[in-house]
Figure 1 (cartoon, rainbow, N blue to C red):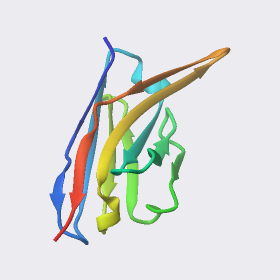
Figure 2 (tube, rainbow, N blue to C red; figure 1 turned 180 degrees about the vertical axis):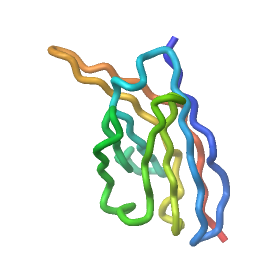
Figure 3 (cartoon, rainbow, N blue to C red; figure 1 turned 30 degrees about the horizontal axis):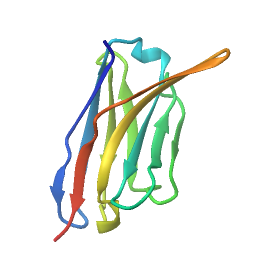
Figure 4 (cartoon, rainbow, N blue to C red; figure 1 turned 60 degrees about the vertical axis):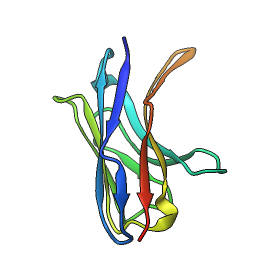
Length: 120
């Protein structure tokens, strides 16, 4: 049974930091690229950051570049999102995503999400 379980969300003041974690089980974690997405009320889900299966390559959405860092520990089947200098516009539900492309198909899994609220 595939599971992606996010944790670490909460309420933080502007300028503060949070570290999200996503624990994976039920699939070969080291074979999947991992990403964080977020969705704010009334907005479409957007890509925040992505990391390759080995961890050697990362990419970030323009709105979080220089503030957020994605990393992974394949020994612990966990992906992280370090969020620094948080802004009110970072408020959203953050979702963990696992993806693997095969010939003719794509395997994709989602977590249930964790709420991040940035407010004074």
